[in-house]
Image (cartoon, rainbow, N blue to C red; front, top):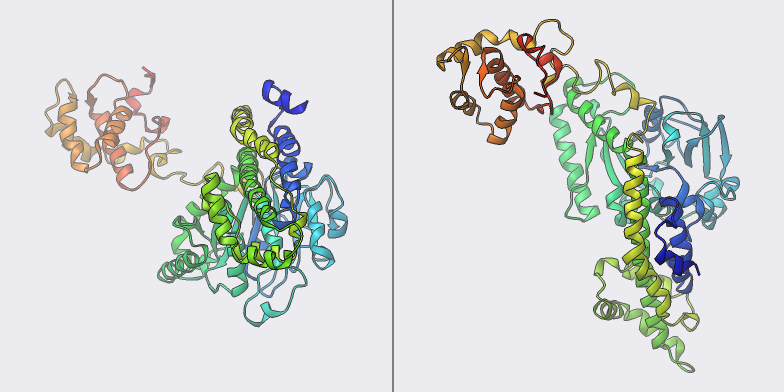
Length: 532
């Protein structure tokens, strides 16, 4: 009944979360359940997975500044927080919004249906004793939740067992978070074996991954260049993708810079990272949609693999020997499925891991191929997802200002300490005198060599002079439009000086404004409408 309505009635979904939840329950979950997707890949999704706020996962070796980074973002300590040069954070801490400060232990957390952590129960008590939720009232946490993780160990320390599969827990979180931030310490760049293993475990989530090279104020510019190069080389070997991961360089805490030479670089990088984090609430629905599509593609492949193995199994004798043969020839089965169903090789699960998991399975209990289940998922991908995509755009349009607010995000928003304040086109913004007037005598000398008529130069005359800047015509065309305040196709001495000032702004590496700011309008033109 539901499926018929789903195709006919486009108003069925109240919102994106509701639509994703219904599609998962009615179309994708039956396929996952039939072909043991939850045993091999990922536990079933719950309602809280579709409704929860965007989450940011912080991963790094000990003493790279993960907990300090969270404190810097929120500008507030959180319950259970410990900071020090030694491995202090020995637990997974979900920092979430709550009306009062408090800590919820792991065992209580995984039975709370309103929290998206119920399926972590599968990792056992060793993990749950090292998992907690820190709740507190904080403006930043009204929009996002942050997951702090234990410092990844190096050297001998990593050989001591944690008692649970650390990489598998991180992979579980990676599937459900909106952003993964890998932190590195510029002062002691070292990627341990365990960290390499963790990064490889996150390899299917490169689109969510960002890298922060923290504590960059502790070294000189020359050393920073070398450390940055070494980091990119190391990451290239581990992540093994042609795309370069975005690396943000800075010092993410509220202390004076030790080596302030790169202050402007750090400010620009911090602003870029903040904008990336601030966009998460606006893009959360799209991320959940994208993750559901990825999950559906993997579930389809899982169905083909399991049904192929079932098909090859003998009915009576030689089951064990056939099972061993099928596992060893799994690569060939992958190729056969790939050709038969036109599936991309990148959609298949890791071969070695799949072979290892299949060893403990009873192939005779596997399900044969059920075309109706696959058709339902195909219909979801072909039709329902497109409808939800349109709904995503509607929700985004209805909430354009949905960004993370509060904490460190407020400090760089407005006022004289905002990024770019008083620089480039903003120079002179709070001065009484017209900022272009400082260099106007120099520009006037050039202006009068261009033989002005009635106090104005033509576009052709101005063009010859402006081309000397070697800026592209597209840029010079924009400068002309901004400088020709009265829109008469000519430039007087004030407008010519303004054009040269904007050329200078561009040559110094700043962006041109979309519209001429009030403080740049020549005093002689301030009564003129700029829209004329």
